[in-house]
Length: 471
Image (cartoon, rainbow, N blue to C red; front, side):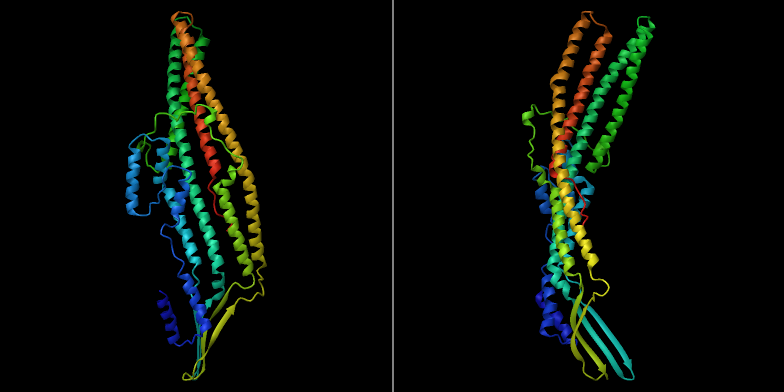
């Protein structure tokens, strides 16, 4: 490759330019440096895959070939052929979500910027041709932005920082999709179970209302008591209708995250995961866990890149274009010999001394520094708040599971015996049956809240996706 580049330079020399050794070095150095700037084989995706799998069990795939697309579709079809667990549903989302696949191409765009930063602008050719009564003036100049050559290492380093920030952003995007999918799965399954229990409440309320209507008609029940039971039955119907609508909304949200066209394309498990048996098995969070958050690390990386960009701005505040190259000039008759030399051009800092650009870069950098400090405070608070919510929701769900639900079940069993002994009315028995079912429904909601708090705690320790503004 270097031989071909040398031939190209020699072609210009044979065309009429006499390039001295110093100018030739100026031209050859960027060409040799640019030859080192190439694309990686994986586009930076291997780092994303390795880091995400340190947080989640599921595999992340970038579908960028027909072979990979076919394999992906087969794996998704295999998972959808059975009821989806919470881990299965995350895997389907990571394989099949089209927006995530679109986000992966940000890596390719960022890497292209890194490679481009390792290439200098193309040389410029200019020519002046004038003729008057057989006298000629011909000027031919080839110039190259020499200043860009010396600034290229710093520019490349800035782009590498941006590329690393993009990788971190994609990692957060993957983990955020996993978090959102788990949340949607928990909500969808809890909504389905709620509908199941509220259907039982409606049936019981309907039976009580019908019994009250018949007894009132027979004169054995007051109009007020009959209206009270009828009102409860109507409210139970309304609550079930709201729950059914909520169930549809949760299912559709999960369908979108999975990248599927219809809700009928997948089936969920029968019930939510079990609540931990005791508080000893709960997660523990240390005081400095928030410092490992990926969004905080990304902001720090962005700030470092801004610091380097500030240095680049200061370095070019007076002269940001310096062009140098060989030139030849003909003045006189066409048969006269050319005069050889070189051309140099740069921007004169007469009207713009670069002060505004430096001030802007300094302000942008200091803004980022203070935003990092602010983010650290917010992150610490988020982790503490999420952990408190996690512990509190566990205690509430545990109380429903260990006390309220068993007590309601025991009360119903006792009242069945009392009803068989004709000690209580059927209305009392049906009321206890409704309360027992309602306690199960309340436990499902408490269990859902705990699972969501668990999921939220996990994400509070990882971070949230953010844009890359500030560069």
